Image 1 (cartoon, one colour):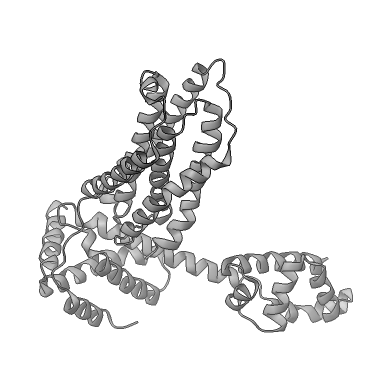
Image 2 (image 1 turned 180 degrees about the vertical axis):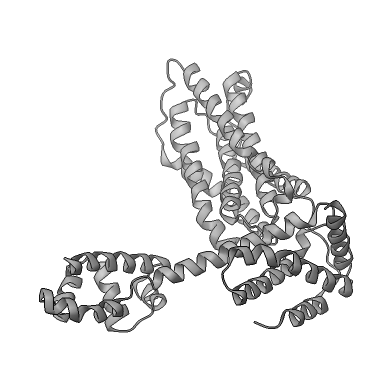
Length: 211
Length: 179
């Protein structure tokens, strides 16, 4: 290693005007905005579920979709905060998705209770997970690409939230596209795989966000 | 404390505008700030110096993530802690790699051999009794002289997985040889 004074002098010589990174709130708004456009375009191509107007009167369906939007929003925000070494000194806000997930689980529990007698299981199964994965690829690539421009000191956690954010877009798309009422199916083939893929984010974060 | 933070923040704001002098002062002050923090956690001065330089380079790389509107010190410490963890992780994994060296076992062996009747061949036999992957790793590393990285590439494994696997094999062998 070189001498400390030499290093300081060398780094100081390198310094040029640098545009500071945008505030994480702005950053996450950009990401969520872009993802929202992507979702709307995808839904306009694939079509909304045929019974969507009727479902708007179903309390638990609406609550589930709103909670999913909340997860999408807060995981994007957390990913943006985690892009900064000090999490923009908003550590508590970084953990907000955990509360959103707790709320989401509660809603799913009540939705499951309300689904009585249980709605019939659809014939398909893994195709849903596949659909969500395909739909989430673009937001995932985009989020990781954007995050690589920052300097995360919690790259594993950042990876989890980036993946969950991307996959919540896919889960939202499928929930609004596919006419499935079975909570068991939705939990088994939509949300559990989404959580599992969130865990894959630990590895991706280590691979892609370490600097 | 607030004044000091403001001082750092103001120096950083000037640095982001391309002021080389302010940046040099900021880096020197940051080095003085972080040195005691690292010295408390590391045993040797040369380690402190090396790590401090790495941290300054990281601060330089990540300076665009600081906008001068929040306290500077938590930002700098976050980077310092991150690099310290990296350093310690590498340090301990290195220690793990050297924890039980196969060659050391061979050096200890003559005493034990006379007492227990063990020979190099019997160790090789013990190695063969290990799970296939562990046996292959030990053979490649200690008979053919490959490094753990080369073994990892050869077997299509992660380097740390190779090290862990070798370490487990050493433990098993040691237990058997001690008997």
